[in-house]
Length: 359
Image (cartoon, rainbow, N blue to C red; front, side, top):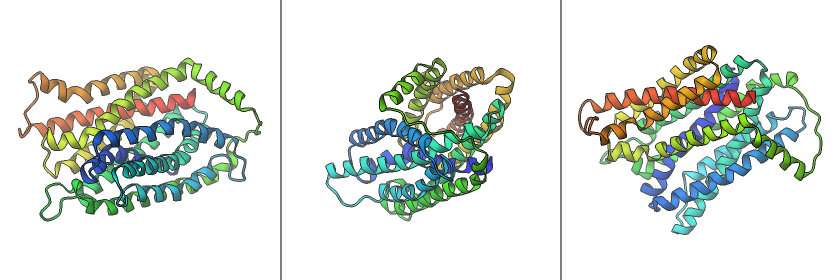
């Protein structure tokens, strides 16, 4: 489980850095309009919605002595590292060309990560047929994924993007981003190779299916039948709502921390540690609650609580019930709410991923 889960570090680094730093970098550092950067990132994400099923289809049809999943997992490491370096080291370009660079490099990174993540996710259902063990497998994935992302954030805030002499905010200085890119590229490639190699011995016992060549029309009909599955559609709709809210929250987080909550420099690293503590709590809490209530009830409860906690500081402030920025109580209160929010949010997504494998 440790070897399998460690590969999720790559997704965690990509996802949290995309959500937290990408818009900030191209808007505040490179100087592109935020709306245009957001549009380019959105277009890359929409394209990813078509790329992921295509990779899943091709992975299912792959026949090799390394099985269906591992060739993709091994092959993804180098493109991820190269794409990541390109994304954070743009050349001097015109505004239009720079937007094209954002889109193209974001697509490269997303596609390369999908080439690992989609086969790796499919592998979880093949490693175990046990209902509860799948939850434990997913718990390890999320622990490593969030842990990798949080670790990268701690390094970013405390080292790569820390304010240097005469700098107010290191996140707004381009000088730290090349090192940030190298650190992320090495972490993602290493995590993928360790996971692929660590699970390599499982290839012999994985189920092997005979590849049946079917028409494109038949494959589309299978896709439509899958979407019509009520359990699948429910999980997809819940995931869409949750990840949309999470994406908006992460994309705005650095703006809000700096300009609304007025975080001092050291608070960013403490926040990352608090968030990782929430992930660790979820690692133990989600399987325990699911065993008592069942996965669907537990996932719904955690998701509702996560949504309430995510928005709590804002509606409490609008109601005049939250400390003003600069008040000594604001950081402990924000950290406590964030701890509970991440615990509930990660618990719900752990259980959602486990149920998707069951479906």
